[in-house]
Picture 1 (cartoon, rainbow over the protein chains, first blue to last red):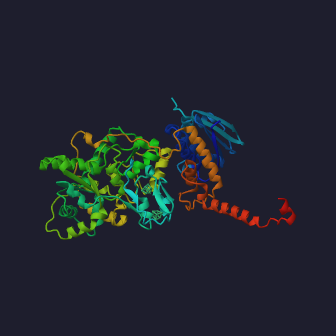
Picture 2: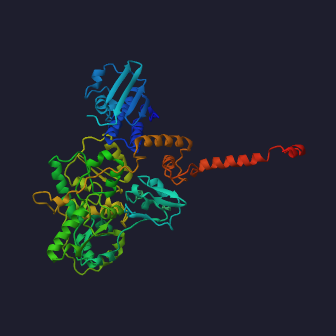
Picture 3: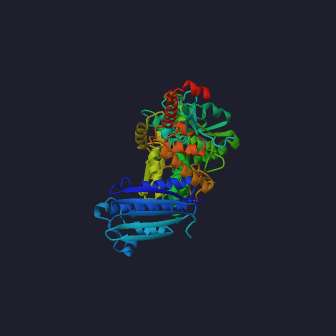
Length: 144
Length: 436
Ligand code: SF4
Ligand code: SF4
């Protein structure tokens, strides 16, 4: 039997108070499953950043998470404006967050580079004007 | 087999099975079964939240009685600074301390004295940069236990220094041995406690093999006797030897401000504490050096074994502190080895579904399936705090689906429908009856 659990979440747009609900739910589940604490931490951070990004830039989206004993996969998809320059977006400290969002303390540029740091693989599929899909995996075994 | 000692227990006779307590327990440790509450021992962190909310006073805290001190030849009281906030119009801490001697103690050692030492050592260690930041205070034993069962990644951030209570017992006993010449076994040290978590910390310490504290007497237990003694004192002995820093530990924020460092956060009340720990875990809280967390709102002054309203006690302590020096206790030179923890804080995953991850995944899938069937009202009528908790109990084999009254109602309706439809079958004609 292929032991994989999958969960789907709707990430609401423009509601900061609810951003992070999906990642914290995933975190609780991973703890109950008995996942390695370091992997849990990396998933929680990567996914939270992804959720916040979706709220800030894309007006929300969908998150799909698959958990197996070997790895955790996260697919975050939105229909937002897309990313024009991925290299730039990946740079530490870079942010395109509008001022009103930055005033809230978000979008300080930790997003993309932090996600990359926390995940074992990360693929970005983005089309300007169409949206962005982010595919991240975190392996159960510690990143060396 | 009693692996877990708990200070918080249930008086079955008083419990009405009203389910008020199950919703407030931060670790989902309570179930109502057969009309009575039950505490799942390995989950309980002795925070006392259930004592606070039970309208029928069925939850209580085991602590020691004052008579217990008679088992020792030389008796030392270790009053928590919270004690001073319980008395009206008090302007001299010495009155409380002398009163303690009047009701049977030979010696008094203020816990606020050792709190000052703990603050000083913490400052030192933080300056040396040896601690993982942000450092999380270990003063509230309920918080330490909460981290141990729910926050694996934060265990290494917990300050591995003995609590002021434990440190006080060690110093006081050593001094008493020198002074009296008695062996350690004949000297008893008793903490005057504001909360049940401290009682548990003595009986089942996390930080060391055996606590040096010999008993914990609830503030509420000695309050009346002590208050009476304080009124009739002939002379007041000059015993107090702590300052603003030590006495400040009684209220939330006191330990933090003692660090003289402004990158700190102090949160109190178990729900707020959990919120902060969640965010810390996700690294949403950054750039802080120290985190002080107290399970009770207001800090120790809000403990369930206090007699006075937490806010009133806090106000009184603020007034008392005005007349004190900043700090009166210091370590000279090196950090005493006895102040450090003997054991590391180890994650104890009591909420984990199974040791086998494949099995845990299967159980998780089943829980989700059952949740779909449940109404999602979290009404508590089944005796579990939420529908999801019931689903977990079912999968773990501790509960049945029809404990949910909505499912039971559906089942009853099905049976009733079946029963009533039985009467509507056409009667057999005489001929058919003969054939059959
Ligand atoms: S609150 Fe809990 S312990 Fe108190 S009567 Fe109700 S069910 Fe029993
Ligand atoms: S003391 Fe706290 S953890 Fe223990 S059962 Fe009561 S509410 Fe739950």
